Image 1 (cartoon, rainbow, N blue to C red):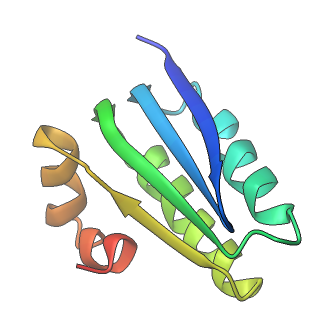
Image 2 (cartoon, rainbow, N blue to C red):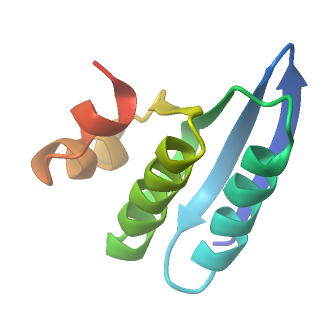
Length: 103
């Protein structure tokens, strides 16, 4: 299955709604979307909504962590939300859920 990302601007934040599978074959597209959202001068935060993501491998985890580091370096907010099922479990087991979600 492929991945799609839709971007929605709300006030000073970008919400990236990701759907499908995040893996080595498409992770560059996710990284590009995150980077583009963070480049806008008036963006204060990027929210990555994983509600419709059914699979996430280590390259996807790495991309999310890179997004967080990029945002931190720019003094902007970054959080992941709405991960469910296996995706939430993987993020929790690897110890990154709390870091990425703020929960």
